[in-house]
Amino acid sequence: MSDFVISPPVQPAVPVAGGGLFPVRRIFCVGRNYAEHTREMGGNPEREAPFFFTKPADAVVVGGADMPYPTVTTNLHHEMELVVAIGVAGVDISETDALRHVFGYAAGIDMTRRDLQNEAKKTARPWDMSKGFDDSAPIGQIMPAGKVADPTHGRIELRVNGAVRQSSDVSRMIWSTAETIAYLSRLVRLAPGDLIFTGTPDGVGAVGRGDVLEGSVEGVGTVKVRVV
Ligand code: MN
Image (cartoon, rainbow, N blue to C red):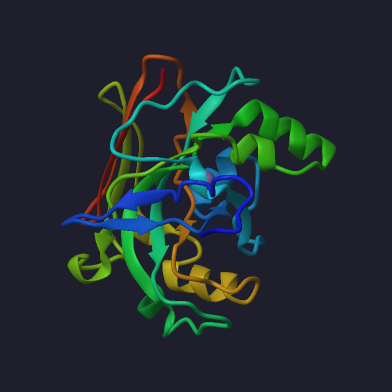
């Protein structure tokens, strides 16, 4: 018998390619990790160390489910990203050990209320409500690391209604996946179930109700979501 005074929340989870579910503990996201995107957002890619923000675990949208257009925005943006799923706990992980902590990889979209984010930047307020809203993290199946030939290279692409909006290569990340894991593990204790969205290439833009977003990371997988 449980001592919980209300029903415990449902465990958010992401399907794994080949079967099973990956339980999501936390979602971390890297900001400005591709030079071209950093420039399009008005930043300087030469000077900035990696920084992180978070989304709630239950922001994941899985299985190609629809994503409701969020409230309080008129500028909902897509950010196509490689997602890393942590399978082994670690603190102060070295770059050379980092990929041993990875359970697998997925294609995901860091959906952003760009108008709220721009306002937050201007007023030096937190990004939480521009990044961590409900259904803000559509994600495809997680491909186990052993089945990903080379997680450091591969075309990353997002199409909206069939038209290519973002197209780059994972190798163009400023901070590699291994460097990101090492860096983040000095800030928090990484644990199994943590997801890391590793940043988006250039080409971010607005979407509206009825738009179908289809993303892919070569050798990893795809993600599909319809905004309704
Ligand atoms: Mn992002």
